Image 1: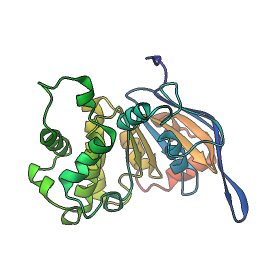
Image 2 (image 1 turned 90 degrees about the vertical axis):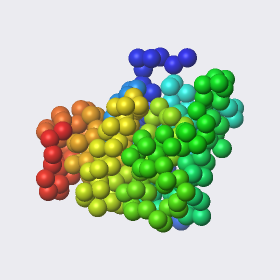
Image 3 (image 1 turned 30 degrees about the vertical axis):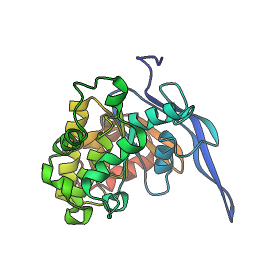
Length: 269
């Protein structure tokens, strides 16, 4: 059993290297970070800083070259099939481009149900058959959580706007009732007004569901609005870390200062 006072996600001195035609490229170098239950946490950096690689390690999609990544004290997506499925239900991703992450050949009802088909229904595992909502009720609940109408279940992704497609992607992530949502640049493909709507939606969902939110972003204005804690990566290394308000008001590195100065108008954290 995990320590309730300990981190839900943790990286300890993590490095990641990949081999290519020009030799070995080191993407992350000795990165350590700790995310507690219910926290809103940002991994920030410019393109090529290693932030998306860090997220993929937390998702268990890649393994570190050295160091350790832990979910509740254990390597993510490890062990027997049931343990892997339990991790996948508990830690769900939301990606940058909702059109690319949603199969255009499937209706929304099929897209939302897909995690339940592949990973199993956590309600079914509890054995409370009499009081358990039907599959359709689960899908409708997820849609309403992201402020979409029931009739969206019968439509296809191309019939929606970019913001609505991202809401559908978020609903699909919510369908397994995850404890952690890992969001990779979830608003960068959207226009400004839609970005603000999705940021407010994520903030509401985190508060209502008590989820942990880890967001990768290059946009410090979004991070200031949504995330209480932050690490800043430059060239695969942590150059700033702490409470978001503290880091943004008094950055430790010139790199972080440059990121702040690049934001035309930074809201109060």
